[in-house]
Image 1 (cartoon, helix red, strand yellow):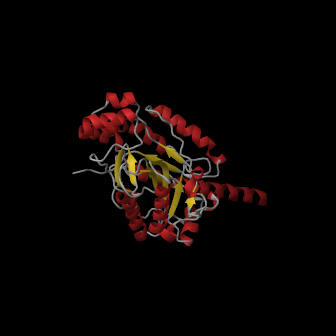
Image 2 (cartoon, rainbow, N blue to C red):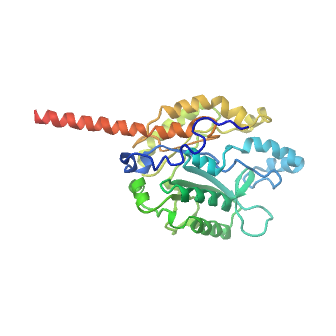
Length: 334
């Protein structure tokens, strides 16, 4: 049986709705929010063709060795073990989404993809919407940032699907600074969709990608990763946007070759998690601090809880500021 640490289950299913008023009144871009990287990869189809996001030599190997090659690919394509529902119940509120049509398949169906095809996008969206309908104060970020083998008709299909599934839960685009949980609750908004493609221009409920930058370190070394994360945080206040800190390591070709049969989780992620989690624990949310933090295999540690608890620092910060104001007032009175 799969073992899961504390924080996995529905213990964080309503964490946003449980925040104190001081935090629900703050801009959402100042709160710490846990997210998942390649959020949909908990299941991939080894019997479908290799995805169009892969290089030619990978497609060749998959053609030559078929299911055997794909079973090795699974070990490197999967970055999560939990379903959308399980991630939501654990407290994950940001989803990193990459989508594609399937080569030689008729119709306009769209699938999640990361090297191999995953579930239909429609199934994932319905699962998320079902959760949100039961947890009315929870808000999710859906970041559609990579598209493959998609023509204009596929984008129209996906954009229409998003609006039909979520309806009035979709938040209209406005100034990021004005987005607080109080504002979202008042308007019954629960979904902020970022659509990194020109086809969404002019649709009020589709936010452009530049409103949620997610700098990518593209390294296998945890120390280089944390240095990169620190450097990009220093620059975030200049953008007037949400911000994603991708606390992830990216395998290179030689990494995969060395750990071919081990896979991403066993060869790269688990051994470096302590360094990455230590960095997360040392962060502060707020104006120049972290906002959204993403991780691979969010169930391996108490990741969601660790990120959510960072918001307590904002309460102590407010108390300190209040004490400083009181001291200043008393001094003036003297």
